[in-house]
Image 1 (spheres, rainbow, N blue to C red):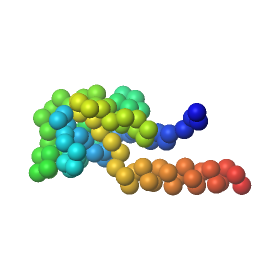
Image 2 (tube, rainbow, N blue to C red):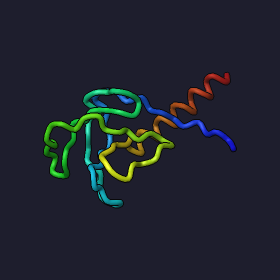
Image 3 (cartoon, one colour):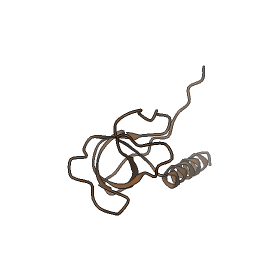
Image 4 (cartoon, helix red, strand yellow):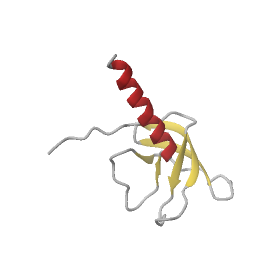
Length: 102
């Protein structure tokens, strides 16, 4: 069995993520959110905006940030990086490996 190393993007305050509220159904659009505080690579506080651009009520804290290779929870709110962000991280990693090999 081979071990696959997954890319972890370090969360930082001010970065945009996609937020999926409790009860989110497949195919529904995520909500836009900003990282307001970082607890760890997989736990953040968010400022969340609904589909009308209105802020969610306060209190959305300690939200799971699902990183590459981790399972999406069946219940409970969570957030993810946008595809563009994961693509940029992959490009950066490839460039760093290429430069390290020279």
